[in-house]
Image (cartoon, rainbow, N blue to C red; front, side, top):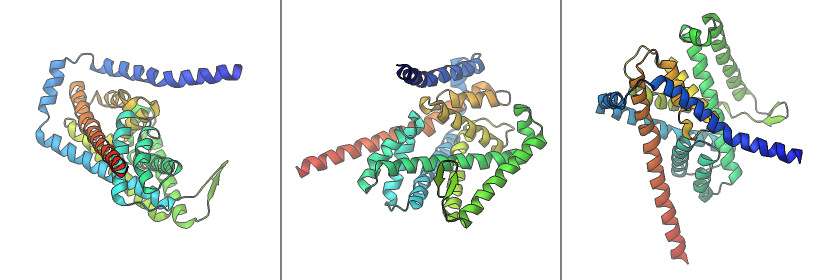
Length: 317
């Protein structure tokens, strides 16, 4: 009975945690935006020029195009051959859904499986593809954070309350650790063992390709929001670190799309540098360009695809 009670408590806690995190994030966002009127927000949205919106949309398109590289690298690592058209379709639809609904392995993974199944991949193959992409994304964030700490330690010193020298040392150490892993990827062929886990590193070529893909993805996705924010004295590399932290925080919170959590990180970090109403307008436009528009397109593609498959089955009968 006690084991059942503990299990039930864990299940309830797991369901309530995202709600609790969302409430905390919403409270933080409300605190920053409490003095903003709807009229001010609308005025800031109207200031966004068509050229900035177009450039942001191009960055979003670039990001979603590059996302197919995650699955391409994972399939090379797993030694599976799938037509690129299928990879691009599965990646775009899976990421568009996961970016808005959260729970990447479940939401994005299920969409990927629905498409990859027609190419002969199983559910475990799709799960490994999804995990590979998440690990690659995390490694890329570590590299960008290390570079930012090494180049702009003063920018983060006040936030972390750590001296610039220590932050620069942390950044250089992070880059050094990744360099060691890259060397091992080129030099080591045998599986590695870390505690109870045994895994094989991707080849050096796949690792370099994935790093280039991940960096391009984050540059394009972060650039989409950066373009929509008013001009401010924020180095782009430093901004990317905060952007990446917001993305990771949103994913870890299990709140759908990281809604409120991502915004909270951006608002709390930059509200003293950029006016809150301008930040809010930029974040709203970013959600529309990077999340809502791709989600609607993905839903349309999946709907047409499902209808076509049903008609083909009915025709065969």
